[in-house]
Image 1 (tube, rainbow, N blue to C red):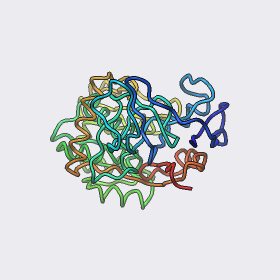
Image 2 (image 1 turned 90 degrees about the vertical axis):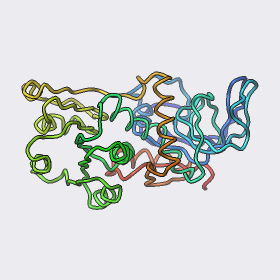
Image 3 (image 1 turned 45 degrees about the horizontal axis):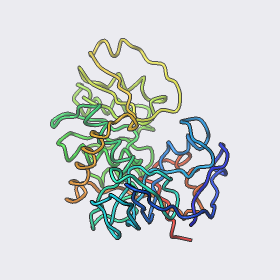
Length: 322
């Protein structure tokens, strides 16, 4: 089968297509034929050698959607032909076939495409955990989703709307802001404008927001604190470097800054998150946003795009496409 392999750490050019033996499921494992694989920023950091410990060579990727090809002995809940999405893999998702633990695969509703299914595992689960487990979001509160046009942000807009929050979403491009409007964000703001946070304060009648989901803390965190309501929270979902803040802005508001990594979620927490996501997917109140799609051989370009481009939904690899 074809798979992307990383033989040494470095730039996107380290992603190369290799022909390798197809894996076979051992006892308690599931083999999934990958129709679409999600590309997440963390995979670029791992590939560069800047994050995590991986033995070389390896196949990147944790998110996938497709059909079950085969199951190992002892697997009773899944059968060949089932439509599924994977939130973790044993052998990497940038491949035509991948092995998974049964607990890491979930039923994919018929109305959800494989490309959309590949956008659930990391982006939607991250948005859910950031909003509810770490952010303590509740109906009636106001949330600012800062840099909302990417995979996590577009999921967060939908999840927050469904949960009864007032959603203020920011985007840096006209196309991105149109997307946020189409996702029914209550207010859409251009974060490239110098006074955009003043507009946030106007929207909230000077009170500020109860919760901020921050995708680029090294740029925005210092000013985020000035827009928080009393006892407000900032959940840091992404950052690409250090930042200087004024702690007095936190003290004045009795406010919190909280880090969030999906990696820290327990198995029980992840199970509950995916049950909630499946319910929303079934009812069409959560629709993962697919942006760019690339054939497997263009994985390097996908890695360049996810870092360099202004995000617009999720990036997906299609192993079956030439």
